[in-house]
Each structure stands twice: as C-alpha cells, then as structure tokens.
Image 1 (cartoon, rainbow, N blue to C red):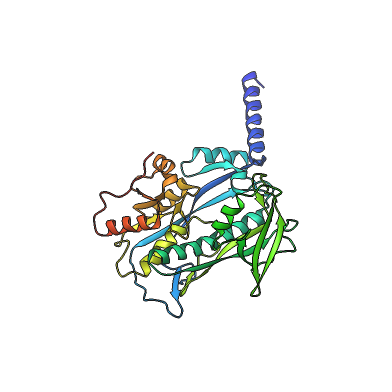
Image 2 (cartoon, rainbow, N blue to C red):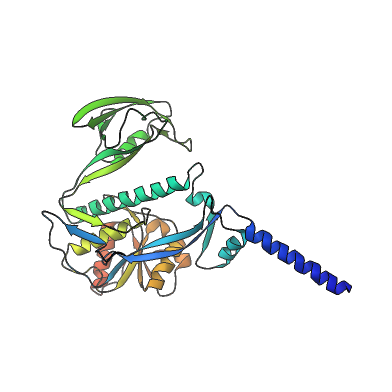
Length: 353
C-alpha cells in the first residue's frame, strides 16, 4: 500500500471513529424547536371547542372566523434521554433550533416527573389567571381565595397543612391571592417563625411554622405549593390536552373576551401570540420566543403579540411577513386588536430593541 493510500485509510478510520463517538456521546443540552400552534377560537384534537363557556348564568357567546393562536415549543433531550454531540452541533447551525443547557428546562435536583407536574400545574394556573383577567377586563366580579395545592414531604408544613386548606392570613395579615402570600413570605428570613391562619372544613385554626431555605438557598419557605382558587360567575372550560406551561395565558384571555363580546377582535385575521397573564391582566415574558414566532408564521400568522420583555429577542429573530405588536397588558392587547380589526393599525405599540 502506498503512503498516500495508507494516509487516506487512516484518515477515513479516524473520521469514522469520530462519527461513532459523536453519535453515541450524550451531552447535557436540550434542543428547542417550534411546536404545535392552536387556535383558541377553534376546536381541540377531539373536535370540541378549545374554550367552552357554559353553565347557569353564562352569557351569550359570539363566533369569530379569525385566529387567536397560542404557540408552543417542543424539545429533544433531557435527563435519561440526552441528545448526542452531533445533534447538538446540527441544532446550533439550524435557524429554527436553539440548543440550551439542560438545567434551563430541567432544574438540578428535579426529576422529569417533577418538571412535568410543574408544567401541568403552570398550565392550570395560567388558565385560571386568564379567565380571571378576561372577566376583570369585561367588568365582571371574580372572587378568589388561596388554597394549598401540594405539601412537600420533609418540609415544615408536612403533617401540619393539607391539600385544599385555605390560607386566610399570614402573621395576621389577610390574604386573598398567591401573589399576596408570596409578597409577605418574601419579607421573612430563613429560620423565621411564621403563623398561618387556615380554614379547614369550615373551621379556622392557626398553624405555627419555622421557615427553611428554598432549594436554591435564596428564599424562606415552609414547603407548600399554593394556588388561587377562583369563584367564577359561570363555567369556562379550556381544554388543550397534555400541553403544559404558563405562556398561553394572554391568548386564552383574549379568546374569552372575544367570545363574550359581539364585535370580532380578529377582523378575520390570523393573529398569534404568547405571554403569561396575571389575574389583573399584566402580560409577562416567556421562553422560546424565536421558536414560537417561527411556528406562528409557518401556520399562517401575520401578527404576533409579544410581551414587552421579549421584544429585543423577538426583533432579532422575527420571521419575514410577521408583524410584532407589543403587549404589556390584556387591555392594551385588546385595544390593539380592535384597532387592527377596524383597519386603524398604523400606531400600535411596537417592539424595539
């Protein structure tokens, strides 16, 4: 064999070995890609209305031929199912894929099951927040209370609090929302005593606990997951299957407002968007903005409602043909859509870098 042939043979073997190693070597990264996008004014996979308003006292609803799509991100990788090195390298070169550290999606010391459960809880909370925000926007009364959703084993609340306990007060200060409890607990230091007034089976009692450090060591906690329990004047059911996370809140709210008002918010246009929502209607940032915009444009959207804090990243990755409209609050987003529907969309809030 000539020296040239031997060199080529050795090089080929090395390339093959490198390929095999790369295809087998798992790396602690996750590939984020555009996920499904669904019309909140349409039907789900079962052919049922994605948002259904019914029950005693339910007002009349109105159809809309346009789209108000929420967007999602799908991923590959994660603990126990890591992507290989070549998949990560290929993802870095693809415009519609983001390669992020594994802990971005799966925090350390949390299992896949815990992450899935948290995403499910966030979706449920997002739906209730969206319903509350929409009804507030329409001037309807919504009452709320704070309830215990989960009690974490081995924490101070374990054995003292139970799921469905209502939290009435924190150290004597009345509370009616998870946000208020969070605000009060943020003032407590690790090791501080805290007295919770709870209502269980209709009876009030006081529970004294000593706070411990949160998993990241930055906050004082007692080991419970809380939820806002709303009392709505009629039934609003949102059915999206196994999709998780909080980022569809804005679009759920807009769809509820649209269904309960005679005029079309979309004007027949294909509008998509994203953003968390508070019960008061404030829009918050989300992750995966690039992938969500790509999914929306591929589905046919021409307008994309964007949370203010995502605007910089969105401007840098905006697909051609997709107009970004900044959404700071539900009320402002509603006003923007009404202007677009009326053909007066020249002076809408815009994203800027």
